[in-house]
Length: 306
Image 1 (cartoon, rainbow, N blue to C red):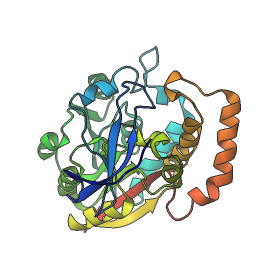
Image 2 (cartoon, rainbow, N blue to C red; image 1 turned 90 degrees about the vertical axis):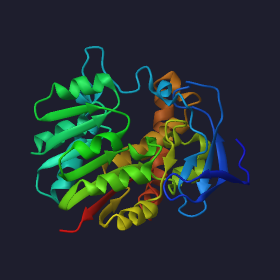
Image 3 (cartoon, helix red, strand yellow; image 1 turned 60 degrees about the vertical axis):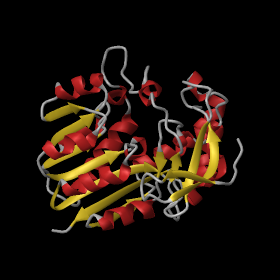
């Protein structure tokens, strides 16, 4: 992979600043294409973004992307780590708001939506996968709208005590507009909660195009926490929480090291020896990853004035 110079005419999808070429990357995680994708870094807000997203982006999500087992049930139901993370996120929201209407953009197979419902929230889900929406609609207390354009759906939904995007913002071509629209849906004192890959992470600095959470070309933009906080401030929201060491962040750290040691991650499970090496690497570098917001993923809470 070659890093280089040169400003692009394309503008940063978050702040509109100009980008400078950063790296090329292939779809290492799923091998849906041999194409090289060009990423730039914004000179203003430091967001890393895909210069020219494919017109047929939906095909990069085909196959088993969402994770359903052979019995038709979501795989998170058998994953204690995913269950703990979803429950943690629901409790995190309850530290800042009373359970009420909640909008989740990009609900996937519903791990968090179910946890939020069980915590007392009334969940409205926006999800582009038809199969995921069918599963979500079959769950009591969850209503799902199928769409890959949340800006078209949000205006019709009632105001919410929380709007959440767990590892979704990086998939959207218009993150600034979505954040502004989400902020407008919040009740007084409501919370906008985000989890995103961290372009200032230790892993990205070391692994570059080999980093699992770059996930070309599905991840269109990787935005630093500071830029998201500034975007929230412009929308009238105040930062009330930021961490890279919550359960999701720690899981993303581990997955990033394991993925990096696989010659071809798309081929499946990592051999046990490489898994032990990855865990050892994670323990060695863990103190660095858990300090100064160097973890692989950021969880951010922004609150509307009450």
